Structures are given as C-alpha cells and as structure tokens.
Image (cartoon, rainbow, N blue to C red; front, side):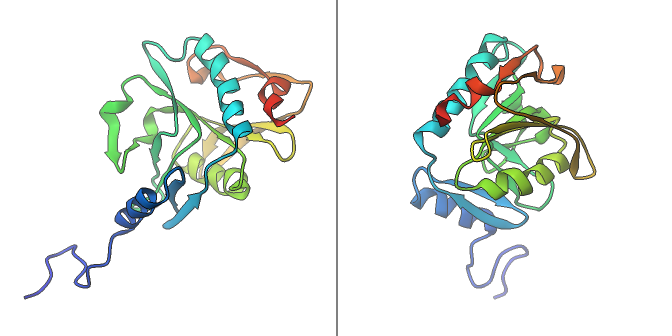
Length: 198
C-alpha cells in the first residue's frame, strides 16, 4: 500500500507538528518558524516583562484596546515567507476582528496587524536582523524594537520589498510619536520605555 498524497511514508512530523511538539515540551519557551527553521527562545527575564507593561500602558490609554483594535501579547503572526512560517511578537496592536482571520497554528493574517513590538533578549539578532525582513515582507506597517542592549528604541515603517524604508532611532532623553496608522495618537518616552533596564 502506498502513502496518500501529502503524507510522509516514514511518519516524520511536518515542520508545524515538530514546532507544536517542541512547544508542548518546553513550557514558557517561544517557538517560531522563520525561514523554514524552527527557533526556540527561552522565557524572558522580569525586566523584559516590565518593558512590555510600560509599553502597554500608553497604548491602552490611547484607546487602542477598544472597539476597532486590540492590544495583545504573544499572538501568532502568519508569515508569507514559507509554507509554515510564523512569528510570535512580544506585543501587537491588531484589528479588533483579528479572531476572524486565523490562518493556522494559532497565527493570524498579517493584514490585521497594525504594530508589532519586540523587546530584545536572548534572541537579539533575530529581533534586529531577521525579524525586520520578515515583518516587512509580511507588510506590517510599524515595527518597534526596544533594544535593551544598546539603550535605544527603533521604529521601522514603510515596508517595501522585504525591508523597512524608514528607520527612526530614538535615544534616552528623547520622546517620539508612533505613526497614526496604529489607530491613535501615541507618544512614548525612551526613558520610560527603558526604565526597567535600570
């Protein structure tokens, strides 16, 4: 008897099945498939979580968690770069109806994402080198990187051809506004965002 189309005759798991198995065995780890490769990130430290909370406060105060949008931590983002690729940004602002746009593996259509945020930790190179390419390729309008190592906040906008054409870098002592495309007027202070680093 021959194997049905799409089945592996040797019983090997698909990439998605392997990622799900790893996630089930490594509680608290973040499992992603980027560029056809499974990446596993250990749980972040406490200051990482504090930075996320400090970012959520102004987003919530601006009304981004109401009728037209939601602020969500660790939501899957389906990536167009590969047949099973997905990422799990630390924080996202998504359209309020995002639940209607589930694709696979608890990941949602990139079209519902207005903003993704990554706070650097042990996966530093992925956040600053790899994810800008995959998020731009997915058409995510705004990618905010909190670089705890170099004490700066980067706002990447205008995705085109797998890259962000606009890179704004903000340093301690500076404030900046997010693009209106996130759905509200939001001004952030680099000192407040990086306060947990101290």
